[in-house]
Image (spheres, rainbow, N blue to C red):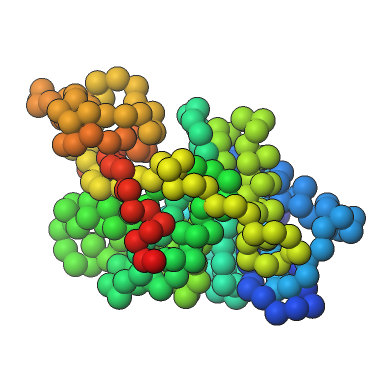
Length: 324
């Protein structure tokens, strides 16, 4: 049996001679999501061979964020690293150990691209942060830059509203202020932590785990990022046209109230739903229907009682145009 003590953490930095942003690009935050790892290694090979040159700023690559989960070919080591990502004075599990190394590293950079993949079939998409705000949940001041960058990754589907919608669900479930704060922290992953340090960040979901095209999607996103942010000498990638985009905002999360709550069919993320359509049935026979036309996101048939069951999204026609 492998002990976590046998693992180590690895990052590789390339710094150009000209000033520019500090960018960090990561793969295998979840150990069975390896398209980012493959793409990062491809870009590093090009840099090391001299085919690609970092001219300005710096880029740090972390090919494997979670080496325990990566070796196991599992999503998690001891738990989901992309939840409750904060340094811990008394680390309780392997992911806490990662956080104690990773969080300071993130804080040394300006921009994060975290590359993931997903279990079901579907097209790639990017998770984007909030609009600029001075609120307490996720204050932010780089929305215009973040969304302009998102449109240059090479994908056409965009999703925003994660932490606010998750937070609404937490607030509804929480029994006390202390519990509310604890569970809200559980919603913080790599991108949310990066934004909390004053930077900005995107999560690219590059495709299905085993899709042979996913590493190419990830590679293109890395190269477009380096070009857009000026780290390499290359034209700024053309942003996806507004008319070609599908931009969705997470609006509401529905909880599974009882272990016997059941979906009406095996839903997949981004399946369309119509207002009034049957989503599932509660254990007592009460139907659960869609409140509006939109798409379902992150349906979890095996969710435990009193946890998130599914999210609903609706089209955001203003995405990328909200702040200029």
